[in-house]
Image (cartoon, rainbow, N blue to C red):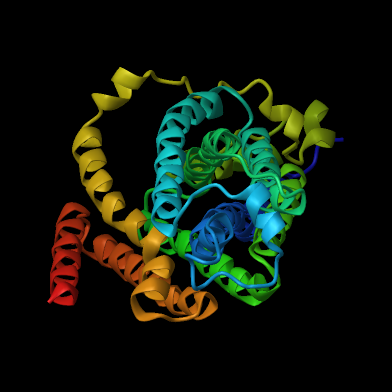
Length: 386
């Protein structure tokens, strides 16, 4: 029997309200998952810079390195030494940083292509778990087995850079799927804090266990990152479509109005009135077509912003990799104290990124905010050098 028109409209309204409610409930959980994943990648990456003094002490003779503990017998040192003095050990640590960044840069390009063609959740979880295993082999297993080899370290760090590179492209793609253009500056500014949160977490964990040996700093962060990869694999929703919700573009273009003004249903369809937002329903949706490298370079502003970001990263990674080492060697502080003090650099990154993103939303302009912030950064570095 046909129902009155007013009654037949209620399920559609219920579906619209249900859609909005479910979207508001789901996206905070997803934001925590993909933000936490990138934080854990940065935490394990930061561990290496937080234990460089201890690693250098292990790789050099104790008679030439005043910071090396006198607890291990000379026979153990004689069978595992890598460098005759601390200067060569420091140069090799810098070489490892260069190797990591080079492989990371190559991996970013490859991961972007792979992420466009495979499920982002698979790529991100694979990168996190595999990178955690590499970090464990590099810092923990080699120390437990007393196996020290320069070429082995280099190979592991090349692989680690490639695996770590899966984080940035995948997480940014997921961010774009869940958040529209409105307020994107504030959202991305707030989200960019997850890298600084990861740095703080890595420095804190390393400083807590460093007294037991630098291998335990790698062990803790690698274990946490591996667990995070498991959570991502089972818990990350890469887009609203995975739970049957329309993409944000559809909402912003009047998807709600289309739903409210849909034609009334006939008698035969009355039993199927409730909208079905199943995962299977998204299988027929067309996927966005991936673009090539040269096509991406031709997009407005891509090359210009890439060059600006490269200059920014040059300075940022100098602090990222060497600030704890510099504080410990230049001021004679204990390595754990230097790690804890370096945290404040990332605290400033959290505050600055969030505020600048909000300002760019208010002004509706990104470039002036970026240019002014970089000029202030130059001034602060110049003031410190004086």
